[in-house]
Image 1 (cartoon, rainbow, N blue to C red):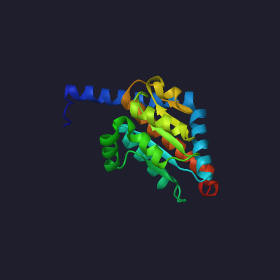
Image 2: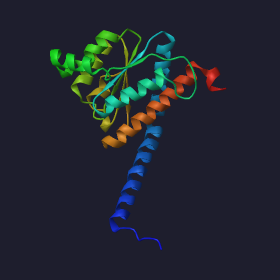
Image 3: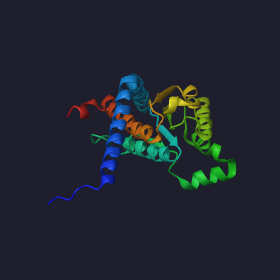
Length: 205
């Protein structure tokens, strides 16, 4: 005889469905509203790689983890075996971050690393759910001063970063979790297009 569901279990099932349905809705809205801009980001990144450049990615908290996740899609592989593509997550070296934060202040942790690693023609990718983090704003300003192309993955209308970067990809949501989920989805889409642009013979195999 089947056990009856606890009343609270039904509430949890409803909550889970609501979360997943909202996540899907946000991604569908993003696809409708921002697909051309996402494609442009992929084209810029592919052009940088063709010219011998690299991508530099950075963010705080969950967005720091996203920066590392996205970087490994380029340095490792996504859909096909192909040459490694140079990408650096500026969030990954805790010794660098704590040394720079201690000596120069937390607002300088990423701008200092842009100064160290960024070169004209590279692409700097800032990731933020709010678009207002001071250390990201400072890093983007440093990147633009060094003639890197700047892209931001954002939410909540874009915040201050939207007007400070060359290309703002804004998730149409105010919910941090839904924004972060969409950042990874659009980053995967970008990485897939980059592979198609750079290695068409492998992607058609």
